[in-house]
Length: 391
Image 1 (spheres, rainbow, N blue to C red):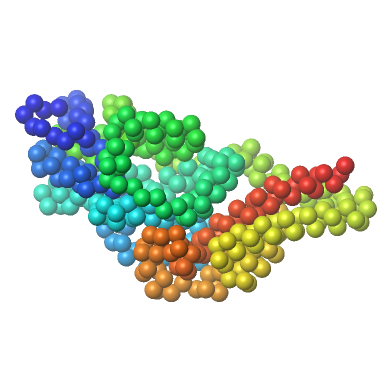
Image 2 (tube, rainbow, N blue to C red):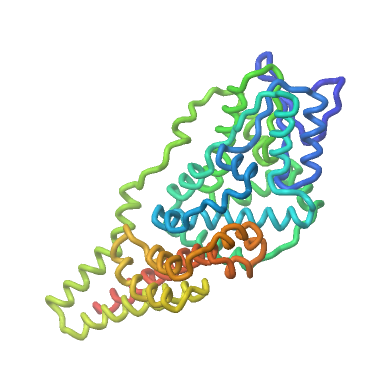
């Protein structure tokens, strides 16, 4: 780093040919990080400021009123309910921390944006589109991990843990960040690879390809080590923008239980006695239906929604192209159509666990996710149970 300028400890200097790159590692909700951005930009007067934002997240931070334009029916039909719920849970998490610490989530990134506009500095939105990132995460996960994450995501809306600024600043320390990432990598290696490692590459290349001799990159502290390594190598970004297609093993696994169950029904009906056929039907309908309905009930769905989940699950479980949650979610949205006030209140509602259930929009998403979880668990329970009736 330069000898004559004292920069915050959160700044890492990287020499790239004749260019100076300054990686400013931040916590995403921290007054200190906001101050670090101001101090670094003021002292360096960089040619370019890169921020860890994609266009979608930039627009959301710039215009928080975007929630008002959401079409919940379209979200369900386009199979984005889980993605939106995940974003809401993360937004809620950061919002709670921000309220405790008196700083808006993403304030350090917006500080970089505002300074670029104020001083006429080139701005680069360096992150990969959040939709692509989430789809790549989901597309590369095994079914078991998907089910585990859906359950953790659902349970996380019940949790309200207070985190003070001292804890956040401790998390920014490089040693602590590496320990957290190591633990995360062991628990969910696929998520860590797509969410962190791939974005290290993406961010590094966007910073590398930015203009100017002096560049300040405002990124999460966890990305700094990876960017520091990757920035010296030129890497094509197209492969990291691709949405993964289902492999033949995933497709096989997705269709195996439905095809096997239908085959069993046909066999029992054709070659076995009527009692076994009826027994298999009852098991499939009751287990799938009850657990999907239970999921809708946990989400406090309307009674008609709960009934819809019960009748939809046994049928949708036999067709991987349709999910019970989509049916129950659309029914809930039709019965309890969100109002403009619900959309306007969504950012405030999700700040508490109770708010997730009270707001019509977030409740619809919970109905979708919990109904799907119930139906998936129902299939996993009913399948071996029906197989056992062979013996």
